[in-house]
Image (cartoon, helix red, strand yellow):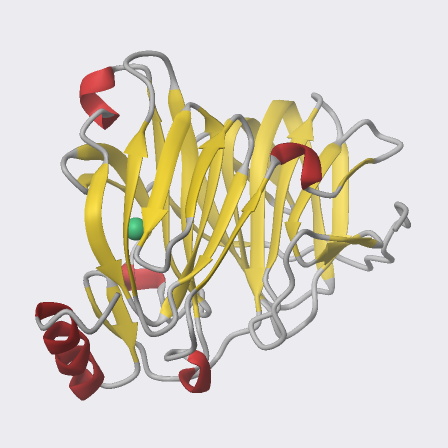
Length: 285
Ligand code: MN
């Protein structure tokens, strides 16, 4: 499909800005958890956003050895570096230089995510997207999307847009989901560049500025800030105050109870106990 500018009457505004929490996960990978459990309800259907960026091998070299997941989807976007994925459903893939991996854990996978480099920059995002209650126990699914296979467009303003999921300005992304309807865009904006896209009125949405600085409605959003957006307009209109890179994420809320215990996200505590015993007894992966 070709670029076809969405009609946008007004922009959603910044409701809250979040700078995230420095933490480590896996075998000691340093990262910033930008979307934490505290925002899961507000940003339903999204459960987590981790940002990693380091050229210190000690920050990432230990990787994420074998660990389980159940009840949601993980979307890993590697901007720089090389990461090898292997899982108990028999999938294996190498993510690098702008590739995306979309994994539906469903009823369960055990997988490892390990760096395949001894030095250099490792940078990217991992977003967790919830599954509706009725789909939490579906069979695992997995797809590697090479960078060149991700639909993209350039606006007349010179803004480059990668459409990882959903639809933007007439361009259909690499992945679509019927219930959560995620929209996941990566934007490269020249200073002064304006970008707009329509957002379904039901969707919760946020942006994360990972380079530069943008203006969004009445506010500016600095580098390394997530802005949670209000739900009161039919789209977003943002402007780069200097060269900027931004991810934009939106999705249709599920409105279902969320019970998370580490890598398991279900609706009821009993289902967490079930996941724990399935994992312990080798029935999960
Ligand atoms: Mn994982």
